[in-house]
Length: 294
Image (cartoon, rainbow, N blue to C red; front, side):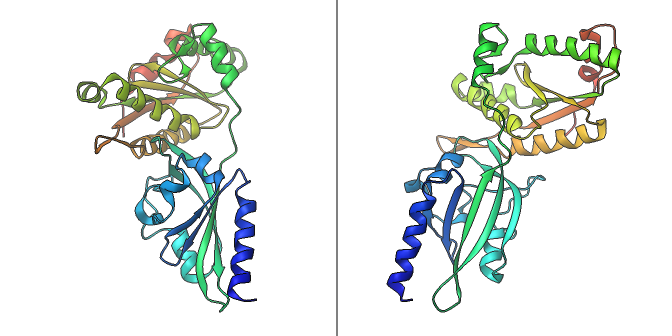
């Protein structure tokens, strides 16, 4: 097979990949991006013309692991595959163009030239099991005045209603629930520094990041102006603490730029197990009294 035939075959496969919903991109040995499919545009928010000729280590996507460690430099699975020719698979969190973090599974595959040497690599990525389409749920919440319009999340009225239902399960059926509260600590500074539209975007970015990175069985809503509440079924207090730490790291890694200034949230959390109580107010009170931690 000559060089021209090889290029024709590669172009054929890239045409097919443009019809896939999963993200695919191709880098050369220097990790310069030379192909970016439509699925990658959908998952990241970045158009092809914004990405082609950039390098994956330029940190546009800025993959991080669950500990918030950036993988773009020393820990990049794509760079390792180019180096040793081994396929790799990892669960990471990419940085969407809008600022929030998206959980994805990535796979890297080496590409070899006609001489048998590695000429680059493909990265294939897809979102972790998709959450159900919630557009109808959002419409229903809005009708019932249970929607926080800044974040498109349920508001405190809805959360109190759900707590009342869960309290019955805990009191009568001995079900186990934990609760996590995540607070944007620098909310006042952000309000004093930026316009309301930017503050709303900060809240929306944090809300999307949390929503994308919790089990679908959780109940998430905006508790007050700077706080989100997550109600988690069957999770032990220790696991709830680990989830709270993970979510804080991901929110703090969810940034965007305004007039060359990077906007980020400082966050902390508190959590605990929901215990039997007389009513929904006393049910959530121990969580409200718990100290915030990083």
